[in-house]
Image 1 (cartoon, rainbow, N blue to C red):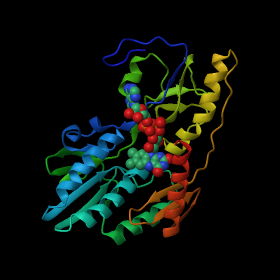
Image 2 (image 1 turned 90 degrees about the vertical axis):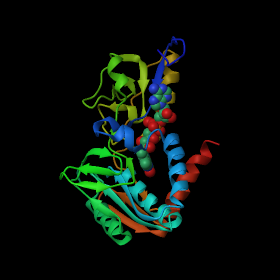
Image 3 (image 1 turned 30 degrees about the vertical axis):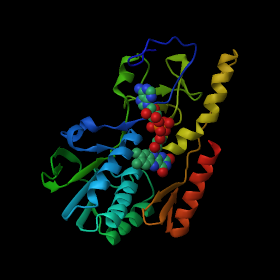
Length: 282
Ligand SMILES: Cc1cc2nc3c(=O)[nH]c(=O)nc-3n(C[C@H](O)[C@H](O)[C@H](O)COP(=O)(O)OP(=O)(O)OC[C@H]3O[C@@H](n4cnc5c(N)ncnc54)[C@H](O)[C@@H]3O)c2cc1C
């Protein structure tokens, strides 16, 4: 295995979990002018620097979030909430622009609830409005119009690392590592992959943390088994899952299957689940 600025490493078994990132290169000008949401540590640094500047901002302030999946929806709501608290001299307008509908693949009830929340909060929602080009201070959307944006966050669809194509390993149609139901590559039983970077061909699921973390125990079990000379065991992920979207104002929307529910207690529930998870790693 080749590493950047390091000697190559030999391996007996390899397990890859490098995640995914929005394809910033797909929008002209995004690499120069937009803030991508991954890597997450970089987003944290850039957000802190940006929000610091916003405390003294006066006059119109346009912020655009590009991408209407769960991450983009949460980010738009959180950015709106935080900036309305700290950029008190600014006239803030947050816009979420997305190529299709928001929350594609989730319940219609969730979309309806979120649209109502966006309206209530004064966040502009532009659906069927993919971004084409970003320049300093503005974004051109699919309708050909330029929209003012002093800051642009890109949260578009999870995409695969380009270097996967050089590995010679089988990939799915979007360039993610193709694995079987034991999480081993379909082209090499000594290479495993899990989380966003992999697609389990037999059980396709959205690229979401909930699936990534649940692959951890069967992955660890299979790595031990194969090292001990045993066969790897197949694993069937759950098909329905609970998604809870924080709305940034101490409330949240929970959705599972075809229902959705909103409330302050939903945020407490999400916070409790997240903290419980994090305690397990301390
Ligand atoms: C704004 C936002 C909100 C989200 N909210 C939720 C949510 O509420 N619930 C949910 O289930 N999912 C959510 N997701 C999706 C979730 O973040 C991912 O599905 C999850 O992080 C995938 O886990 P992973 O371990 O596969 O990858 P990651 O968590 O992305 O981890 C990959 C790691 O690999 C490192 N890496 C990358 N390339 C290399 C390389 N070449 N060499 C070495 N290391 C490398 C990265 O730096 C990173 O540390 C959200 C995503 C975004 C963007």
